[in-house]
Figure 1 (cartoon, one colour):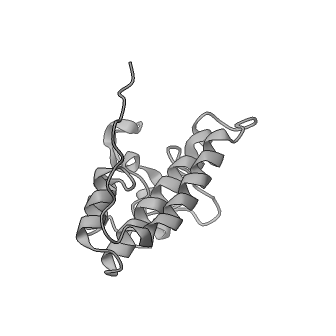
Figure 2 (figure 1 turned 120 degrees about the horizontal axis):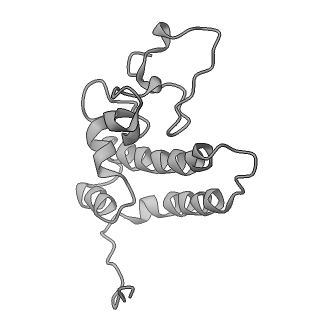
Amino acid sequence: MPRIRRKQTKYPKGFEVLEDKLDEFEERMREAVLESDDGKRKSQSTWPIIKIHHQRSRYIYEMYKEKKIKKPVYEFCIREKYADGNLIAKWKKAGFERLCCMQCIQAKSHTYKTTCICRVPKADLPKDKVIECIQCGCRGCASGD
């Protein structure tokens, strides 16, 4: 049985700075979920959802990094799942500044227990081939690019 919420969530002071953009991301997410996946591979149907999730997390992280929002608002966004806390934690580490999703660095998600092809620098890949990640559709999120 679903849990019934009896009271509204209290938004911290300064959340209104993010509110319009987060509503826009929410609308785009609804459209991506309802989008038909006819003619697409099974994994391709989730790519737009993962991309919007990444963009929303990056937006909140950049707003905090540029000091446009305060720490309580940032922590509220992570706690309420507006942003992916694990992904943001990786962005703070050297070598992961442009990471597209957490699936790309999880070794058990890939064939040879390594990281994803999108983590390989473009200089080390063949120039004539377009290479996309199977998990999220990323074409390259290595920090050295």
